[in-house]
Every structure is written in structure tokens, then in C-alpha cells.
Image (cartoon, rainbow over all chains, first blue to last red):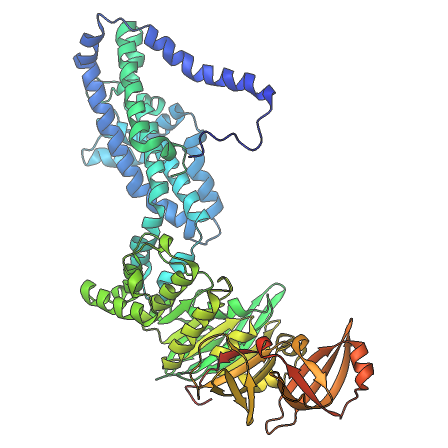
Amino acid sequence: MTGRRAPAVRPPRALWVPAVLALALIVLPVLGLLGRIDPVRLPGLLTGPAALDALGLSVRTSLLATLLSLLLGGPLAVVLARARWRGLRVVRAVVLLPLVLPPVVGGLALLYLLGRTGPVGGVLDLVGLRLPYTTAAVVLAQTFVAMPFLVVGLEGALRSADDRYEQVAATLGAGPWRTFRRVTVPLLLPALGSGVVLTFARALGEFGATITFAGSLQGVTRTLPLAVYTTAQSDVDAAVAMSLLLIALALLVIGLAGTKAVEGRG
Amino acid sequence: MSGLHAEVEFHRPGFELRAELAVAPGEVLAVLGPNGAGKSTLLAVLSGLVRPDRGRIALGERVWSDPQRAVDVPTHRRGVGLLAQHPLLFPNLSVLENVAFGPRAAGTRKRAAHDLARSWLSDVDAAELAERRPAALSGGQAQRVALARALAAAPDLLLLDEPLAALDVTAAPAIRSLLHRVLDAHRRPTVLVTHDVLDAVVLADRVAVLVDGRIIEHGPTREVLARPKAAFTARIAGLNLLTGPARDGGLEFDGLPLQGRGAEPVQPGEPAAAVCSPSAVAVHRQRPEASPRNAVPVVLTALEPRGDVVRLRAETRTESQVAVAADVTPAAVAELRLSPGEDVYFVVKAAEVAIHPLSGGSSGA
């Protein structure tokens, strides 16, 4: 289509040097990692119990975290975009907190809220529920860190799509719930796609909050990033093999969703 | 059948709307006004999208809004249909599903709602578009579908917000003619907001002129436009407007045949309006003999210099004594030695006269 056409205004040549450097910074480390692969041991390392456990756990928890983000973060985005009370700006800023907070701090915060001595964790402990160092803790940590991607993306899409369609639906006799289901959600689907992909990718890569709040127990809380980190200290080849799994997963996500969705253009 | 009674007060910094409206069942009220006069706010208040500060809005016995008594019926329970400047068809639904949206929201089963939608689509001459997506429609087609969608919801009050403003000049007459037909058959009150005096002529029984948040003039369309009192009305009513039953190729004004081109189709005998711009009018002392032009006997009432032309104001020397205007050069005024009180002829080529159908006054207003 337009791919072959020269842009009307060419970027200045001075930009080419830093642009190439930036690309190199992204591509070369990945190539370097691939060069470090030991082809003899690779098949065994990829199918070993440590790698397969971590892969299965990562995919399961990331999918659950994405679902949780959708069920809770989706409604939050709609409320933030359409409600009209005064404190809303503060709430919006709070939602951004996990995006700027170092994940380790988030993990600590979760631990002190939901740990056995925490205000909520103590209550849960009374009914026999212990969250820290369980798979559920992994999902919570991933949701904490990844959900803002979904909320911010959806809210932006909602706010830029004006509410005239919703007004028309109201004049046609549709109540708020019907309008939400039949008008708002379909209009949001493209933005929803990119938001879900970003959320899943962020959950998949989660490290800091997970290791602080959920620990690193093989098969229970040791997701792929944790496994890479732990293994790298004893067996570099195994760590590289697991990294390869993460790279493959990332490429799969981009391929499934299409680059458009990742770029947020829907 | 219940009419609309609305008293609306709405205040914002630097803006105040204070208006009172009454629209009978079957009647079309046009609210005319310049940009920023408060027309859109008025419609938003009537539809419930914006809350008024004071006043009362009622349709028959049902009170929709009464801020003093904390009554505020939400939009979706009011039964207001809205046709806006842009069709705003739901892009994810087919044309048929768009039109069926209102009946579905009212609880009609899918099949019955689709049957109803098909019948409304054929009423607006868009039956063949049923399976299309909104993105595949032209502006005029989309506006037809939007009208069908609004009517299919069986609204108790129909609101038209500049329904022709976004259409190109080739599509607007067909939609105006469609609205004329549909509104004639519509038995509920309708409020039309427009800045185009032609819309009011063709569609409205009465007009209210809204300027700076106040209604400064109101009455039957023909009377207000034929004898504008406020300066704004005079400016927008700048067109000459002569009405009478349609005849082949024109109409009959006070027994005088006028020829013109049909802007929208009109059946002979139907009420029609002949519209022309003052700049198209020439002034003659004597009736031009054996000429294809229209000649209307008038008596001059005033001469107003307007830049490089002189606007002659006059009244027809016919039974209904309609106010008309002509823009002529100062040289012509001097040559003909024109002054107020004189009897002259206003002469217009048939090609400069547009014949429009006139709102039939379905309520007898």
C-alpha cells in the first residue's frame, strides 16, 4: 500500500546515527544471547523439568493475571473515563503508581498488606488462607504490576472516543447496561486487544514483585524470569535456554496480536 | 396524544438560556438562531443529556424535568428521538440492526424488531441498504437510516438537530423532502433546530427565533418570515418567500402564477413556497409584456443603502401583502427615480425561483 512511497518530508540525516544505535541496542543483545546457545545441550535443557515447570507456570499465571486485569481494570477504566466527580484526577494518578514504582517495592507493599502480619493477611490467616509464597501470590503480583497498562490504554481510548454514540443509544431507549454492552464495549474492542496484549506481556516478564511477594519455589512460584535469574548463577547454558523460551513467547504474542495491537493503534 | 411544554432555565458563566416552548402533537417547531444562541443546549436539556437549573419540562401529563422537585427522568426513559447533524450509526452493527436497536431496547423480540426495522427502512426509501455496514453508506444514505432508526424507537418527542447541515448540496434536498413527507405523517411533537431558513420553510409549522439564550420572536413560519420583527430574523429571512398552492412548474400566489424550478418534488395543489434571493430581483416601472419572467406588483416601503447596492423593501399589491425585497444598483434607483410609496413591479427569471414544498401544517397551525 503506502509502504514503498517515500514520506513527504525526510527525517534529517543527523538522526540516522542515534537511530541505528538505538536499534543495535535492542537487537544486538538478543543476537548475543542466541550466539551463547550450546546446541548440544539445548534440547535437553528446553525439555527439562525446571524449564517446563517454569514455562507452564508463567503461561498459566500470566493468563490469569490478564483475565483478572480485564475483569477489574476494564470497569475501572470505564468509571475513570465516564464518571464526573472531583477526586477523579487523584484516582487517575494513583492508578499510574505501579507503572512508576519499582516492582520490588510493589512486592514488599503486597507482602505487608497480605502477609500473615499484615492488616488484610492477618484476617485471611484466621480463616486459613495464606497468600504469600503461593501461585495465587504470583498472579496478584503480576496483576498489580500489569493492570495499569490495560486501565490506561482503555481509559485513553474511551476518552478520545466521544460519548455521542452512547447518547444516541440513550435516546433510542437503551439503559446504561444495554448501552455499555451493545455500544461501549464493541467500540472499545480494538483498544481492548492492544491493552490485553501489553498486559499479558508485562505479566509474563514480571520479576521483582513476584520474587518479593511470592518467592521462588519451583513449580509453585518460580516463573520463567525467576528461573532464568536463579539458574544463571549455577548453569548459564540452562539460563540461556530458558531465555530463549521467553523470547519465543514474546515473539508469539507479537505475532498473534499483530504489531498494530502492540503499537496501540488497534 | 400529548404535547410538549417546556420552561427551561440554564446558567453557565457567560451564558444563560431562558426559553419557553409549547409544541402540539403533530406540530413541528423550528428553533432558528445563530451559532452560540443556545439551540444545542436547548435540545440537550429536552433530551435529558443536560440538566436545567430551573423550569419544568413535561410531555402531556408526564413530567420529565422539574429541578425544584428533584424530578429528572433519564434520557432512556423519556422516549425522545434524536436525529443529529451526523448520522452516528453504530459502526459495529448492520443498517438493519441499527434501525432495530430502539425496538430491541424496548424489549421487542429479534424477529419482530427486524420486521419493524425493514418497514421503517422502506418508509425512508432505504430498504435495499438493510444488510450493509454503516461505513459503506454515503452521507445521504446514512442520514436516511438514522432517521429510520430514530422513528423506529417510536419516540414521544422527535428532536432534529441541524439534520441537513452536514450533507452536501446534492444530498440535502432529497433528505429535506423525505423529512417533509415523514413529518407530515408524524403525529407527535417535533422540535427542529436549524440555522437554515429553508429547513424552517419546508418543515416547520411554527418558528421560534433564539438569540443569546432568549426567544425573541415566535409564530407561524410564514408570518414570522414574511414580516420579521427582529434584526436577526430579517437577516436570515433575507430571502423572498411567496406561498400558495403548487401548479405545474411553479405555484399560484394570490391568484398570480409564478414559474420556478422545483427544488424538491411538489404535487400540484399542495402548499408550496417560491423562494428567491433579493439580488435576483429586477425592478420595472411597467409590467414587462410577453416575457417568460415572473412579475409581481408591489408598493415600495423603504430604500436602504447597503454597501454598493440599495435594498428596496416593498409589499406585494396582492391580497396577502407579503413583505419582499430587491437589491438593485444606486444607478437603477436614480434612473427609475424610485421612492417609497410608489407602485412598481418586481421581476424575477423563473430559473432564479426555487419551488419548495411547504409544511402542510398537519396540526392546522
